[in-house]
Length: 269
Image (cartoon, rainbow, N blue to C red; front, side, top):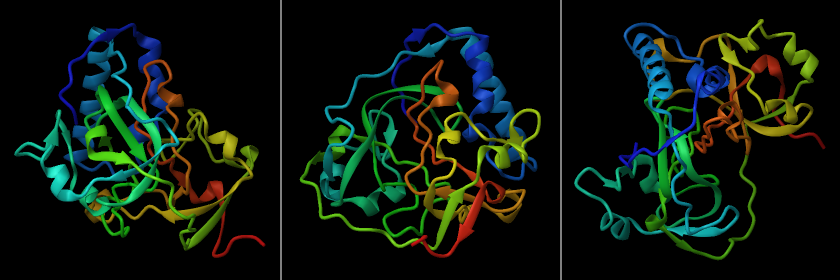
């Protein structure tokens, strides 16, 4: 996703093994050939590469801090920063990002290092994610359904005042079941349908959240989720715990199997 240079930092087998607990590398998709084979080969290749060359040091911080409010610049202004492939310093301004132009959002995470779409750990500088700005687009009709956080260069946003608070409607509500109930569904590797209940998720046990079912709108039927229904819960994203040894600020939405939740159509009164 970015062409910034690598700077090596210490790594080793322990850091690589920690990646086995990362949900992003174990998405609940049907792994039919050819894509399933390609995905597994890519992951194995990057694990070997990481042992050989190490991981990049974190990139430069953003000029913004987590919690700041920013306005995404208008499309015409952003286009002046992009090359012929809609990239700035190697980072693509994706199709779903255009729908957020002009909107005001809060900085959710300063991104300095992350696992990219090819499972390689990348160094990023001057880059942030914004609350509510995901691959689903401003109207919620785009993307694959995984609610991936979009990456914004500092050059694409500007300071803004906080807008009036509003509550988004929710189709489903979910209470996270107890850890005992969840652990009863997991195999010896802490997985259900080969998807890990990853470190950090346990702190949400007993909490109640707005829920959205993972639909994978852009994927063919033979790639869609396996093992029943999967959900994302509002505001719950990975803080990089599975890759603590290497660092990852990707902010993936956490995936929750229906058996880990008690679902309803309305919030509790």
